[in-house]
Length: 377
Image 1 (tube, helix red, strand yellow):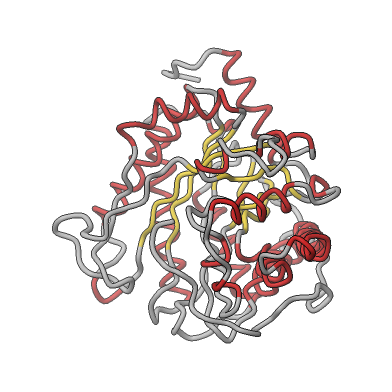
Image 2 (cartoon, helix red, strand yellow):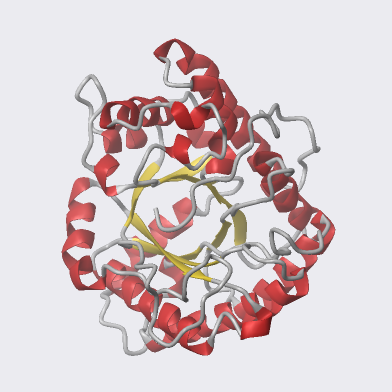
């Protein structure tokens, strides 16, 4: 790679990991919430589960030991707490994951300050545009994560849409692009495959067309920055938002979402990148998050059966909501909760193959829907 300081051996290891994470039919289990994932599940009863380290460990160890989960999940994204945590029996969480045939990874961004970037406007999230923290300590954290068994990483930057105010601004896009590119380069130097996640949040009343324009601007800038920072694309992955309408905007169909999302990717993402893994994102309270995320992904593959990248899922709430509501903090419910998780993961494997039939995977649906916790996590 022209100008890269990576050795051939480093590039070979990164490519092998990225290719394994992009295995056919598989995606990511996003398990990197700093608090209990039930607080972000958007369910009125689930949010009452006590948010203790013991409960977080019990819940997550239950997830990672789900039988045959590696048939659908290639990698598990962890919070720093979980990377260094053990289950009740003293087994490392990373060992539970690897012993079950999956690859552990780590969330490395340190969130953002809602005071925002000076000179930027307040967007639909109620604060100015933001920049993530954590680059100053990233080198050490990446090296330590690799030593603990992680083989990939994730960094999420948040961007807002408000067409009337020109958001996302060129400044916020530039800041995000170079932040994520520098993170990616540091990760690769330390043996971790970087997942680049510029999330354009759906808050607002904008149309799907406005999101399409913003997504193309954002992705184009980010891949330009990745090239400038000499990031090895064959050992890198992308976690973007789908192109969708704002939460209170004119509702787009799954077909419209599929066409505009894939069009944006085809216009901006080099085919050298092995895999693209969508986040599910926040949805209106009258939408079943799990089912909608699966349907949207399946529709992309129905319309576009051949794509230059592995196009899959990196879902948190959209894999776990029914699982959480089934579990409810009780060990006696572990088996049923694992069955719920496995069923939704199998549904998303079908979606990656373009064969998911809406309504064939049991879901808690809209029952108990409340707004999920927002902001950095």
